Image (cartoon, rainbow, N blue to C red; front, side, top):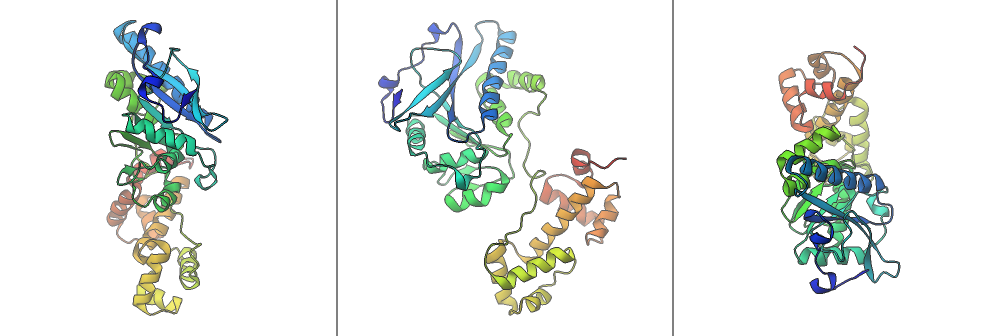
Length: 344
């Protein structure tokens, strides 16, 4: 067991000679309550495969990655290593990863011991990483203040609310900010793992690993995967009434004076309260509703893009295409090719 607050001498350094391998780095994976074990074991396998690819290219002396698993000790007084891919006398992980959680962030248990250890390790030079809800552990460790970070698009508002000094950006799947690397979606551990392989073993090994695993190299965005989830629990009954009407009517008519009248409010008051309640201006809110309906039509039908644009309220198909790409990150035709399920 490693004590919280221990020194480098207490931890020691990995003796590569005892492993028979040229270890370029040790990556520690955190095991915490309700962690997604698929990500833990998937990353462990990914780094092992990357090491094998490295040795295939460079021979038995080529660099590999040591992987270890860590959890808080039962007495809460320290952390302990429960798995080591290259057993050695002591550990000094250069990278630590907080994997996704199987439960919503609001239900995650307090993990003061682990987060204190993360903060200490970061202060001693370790690179800290997270996937999906794992970003909340970095936030609890006090490491997201003033830093760019991503998480699952569905958790973005909660992350920003809990850690208001963080710069949350869910358009990107991976944000590599040097000493902090955060990845978005639940399965974005593949993107994070390949990002670390590229950093530690080089782009050629990363590409070989991606090809072997049949996954895309890092560079994806979350935009095409997200969908509009309106805020309805804000407690403003007048604005909620307008939201319900916009949803039911497909937001075809979102003239602000008419919406303010429907809410029974003066126009300026309506605009202020609408943005406070929803986080969007009425025009932006209407666009999100229309694009959501367009997404569904592209996924489930073979109707021409121009017809879909007209059906959701856009007379100018060109303007619709530009707006669709701005919101989703894909042109309508590309979105259909990736997500369409309609039978030709």
